[in-house]
Length: 179
Image 1 (tube, rainbow, N blue to C red):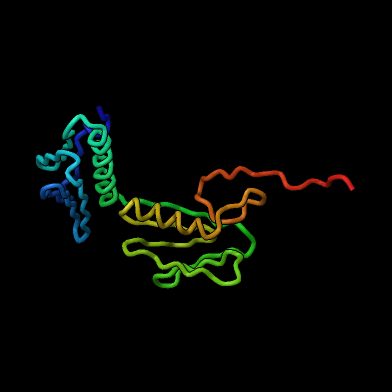
Image 2 (cartoon, one colour; image 1 turned 90 degrees about the horizontal axis):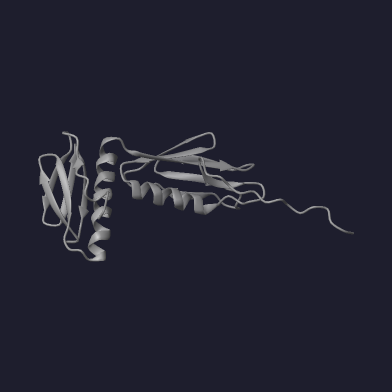
């Protein structure tokens, strides 16, 4: 039995929730997010309380029960508070700047990297920290992973793009050996 799936989801009063078959819609102002459960869970909406139920005792339905409840909770949290992820750039000459809807990265390659900022996200740069904000947790994580993939941190000097708070295991370099 899913401990997460059986918890009811309480939404604030300013979020409008509607259920149409297997699709749950969340609205707050002009922001609208939908979640398609593809018929894997039972959905009950009473006022602002969303309850998920297990359709059968099969392993697949049990797995989706907690997953869709967690995805719904992330949508509600994204519409009320929003999500943030920060990346740190380490390295001599490594820079980042935002020009309109393009993130310009100078990461030691012969040419700059121009990354198109996805719709619905805002990216700010202060010194060597890139901050990604938005209401879609999956889109923020994917964007952060794509930016980090341009120059992942290397283990010898720690140069590259890493998450703020990420620990990079450092290796010892070559030592003066035999002649």
